[in-house]
Image 1 (cartoon, helix red, strand yellow):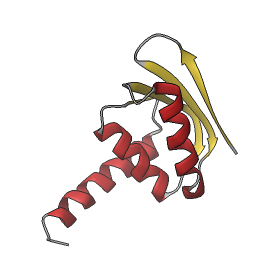
Image 2 (cartoon, rainbow, N blue to C red; image 1 turned 90 degrees about the horizontal axis):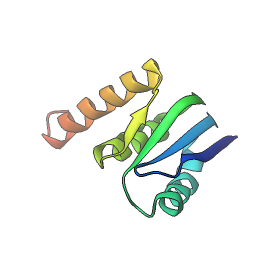
Image 3 (spheres, rainbow, N blue to C red; image 1 turned 30 degrees about the horizontal axis):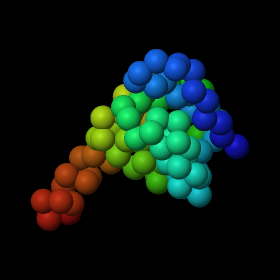
Length: 96
């Protein structure tokens, strides 16, 4: 179970994501983020995000690549994002 809550009305919006997030949740999360932010810049506070899987990490990495700020990102998630980025770069170059 996970929760997305807006904690700031100012721009950029700050959304707090908490709980356990799995690949099956990514589509719903994207839809809620779009509704909350109207596709404007936003910050995701991940301080209460406890468990993620690989698809969620790819989603978070894509959010960050699109300009979102990942605030209070757990070290293991940050490392996984970094590893995911370097793997994507290697794959794009065709040197897997």
